[in-house]
Length: 200
Ligand SMILES: [Zn+2]
Image 1: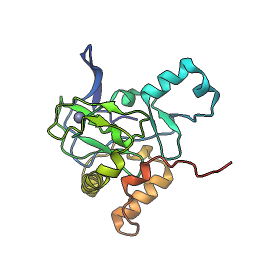
Image 2: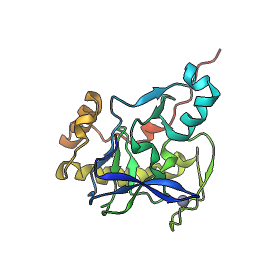
Image 3: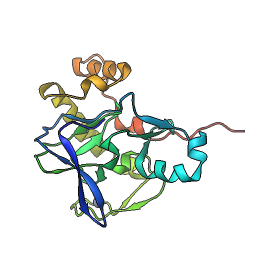
């Protein structure tokens, strides 16, 4: 579920649509939460094996460490990539604002954290543009992501959190444990897809 202070706008024919803030969203705000209404699809599912559905799933879903594809039921699937994005995924499965987002600003995240299958060329215009986004980004970017995400999570208790109630119980417990000092920080490296080690 996407933060309520957002809306879908058409950008241009080349980029298509994007999500924009309709109010200021401060650093530390949960901007996306994987809620109980998300559509979860595995590659072995009949739905994914049906080519006419697979193309839509691949375009609009993100992939978790267990290989499941998460297709958002709301506008979250329209968030665009930027190499210097204003939100990042966390090791807790939600996305967080890693800097203050002002009203009217486009909400962006980093597709390098979403286990995309093919390299994607990028022209986001950032000074930090990696030009190619894909499977190797965890190896090169995880420390940078963790530094920004952990700093944002440390701000989480101090800002309004309309999506906090949509986190599942386990995620909320891990997060609250970190915030009170009883659990270690959960690295974004937890998001990287684990390739099955099963040998036939
Ligand atoms: Zn870029």
